[in-house]
Length: 293
Length: 319
Image (cartoon, rainbow over all chains, first blue to last red; front, top):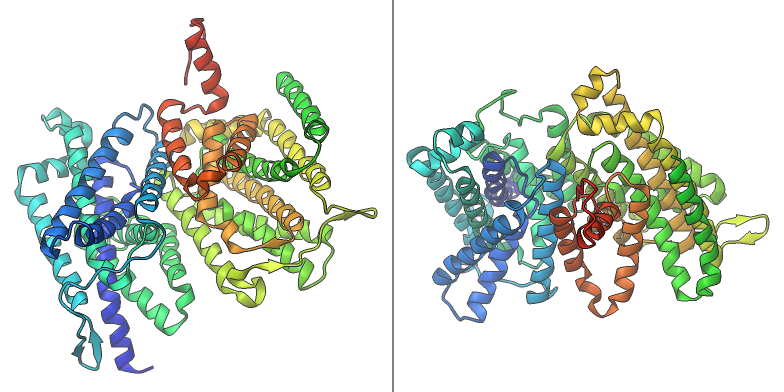
């Protein structure tokens, strides 16, 4: 096996991995604030991509304006979802929550199919598609965009959770919701915040990956599940371990697809997911009972 | 139990009389599917409704049954009646082996693990082209035969499928009312309390998971032999979700509820032909509305609604 080839797979794996990491952090943030695995997380990713498409083509917005507009609309969808489906739930047992978020994800996906149809759509890359050579391998400018934007979001996230009042309040909720309520934190508001942040991050992930992989009404399913794999590897942390989990998953998947068989690419992620759940359900880096924010 | 048996007898009579009432035709074909889906919904309900363990990968077991039967009878020319139990045993062994690690997980993690499992099985169906025919499917699967009668028409298939469906329903009703059924419900309410009372929750969960997979596999074999053609598309993630919807809509922990859910979700698309691809929106909305407003499903929700409307507020009305 040639070194160049492995380098090529690793580099492209890193950028898909960054996407998985962003989606995974979205999962973790909601999970830590509410104890819910939001099965509709992938749909925000899909909305981000498709809304950008519409902003560019129908509203004729430039890219720099289309991105915030679509992130904002996806976030509104996230808020509506939390308000209409999660908050009024009378018996919030895990099974009911799984079912209702699955229902929500099907509904959002179905509505997207109504609006955008079943075709696959392409979004132009952010800055051209002249490949850049790196030591025998080539990457596209979009790969760099993905890595850079992911990095910015992670730094921003860290700052929010450790240096702002509402970020600290969300961490308090993650430790113990009841205790957080007792010291005067509005837990319901924090739940809403967690949906806002997760929806926004999911939408960003969907936008930056769309120029590479194209987008369609049903891309959210697989991307969402892969993001969940990343979060599981990272032990449902919204910090660096989920990022490592995402990158690991992206690289393994890319190497597996390149060196073994591209048909089994998706199976690789799920086998990793099952192995982690069976052997180390607390995540690859977690202690049995670790801090999870 | 007596009430259940009475209800079951009435139901069985209705099922036997239905072909006379509807005089064959296209509806018979739909009712065959209602039968298969009822079997699957009952199987999932044993796991989800009684034992409280979710599975988002049951379409995988259904598919395994169908493909094992299909491959054995076409490629290896094994008799369908022999292939069906072999498939069921193989699927049972697989489910039992997977069950031990999978059922250690709870709630969301269990949902994700079973979902992953279902998707892996789906990918295998698509990729092992030499064996399964890949995405274009496997055709030429023989019909079942008994003493010279070939089950090749809708009416004959109707009786064949519903014979199995009624057997599965009767078996499940008995199971639910037995010591095992009570133990399952105890595990559902509190695993720790059940263990303290001497229920081996871990083994019990694996047993019911295996049983559920075996029933699904039999339904799969029957599906393969009545359709004579199978392709991976029938056994994907969406079908697992559809099964979940049937169980939730009908009512968790109710065998007749599973029939209601299966009948509704199988008949609904037939009446909604105009919206064909968009029926998925209706599933999503139905799932959400049911969990929010009728968490007990139709079997409990409708009587409660009736009491509410007609003012006899005697029941506890847990809907």
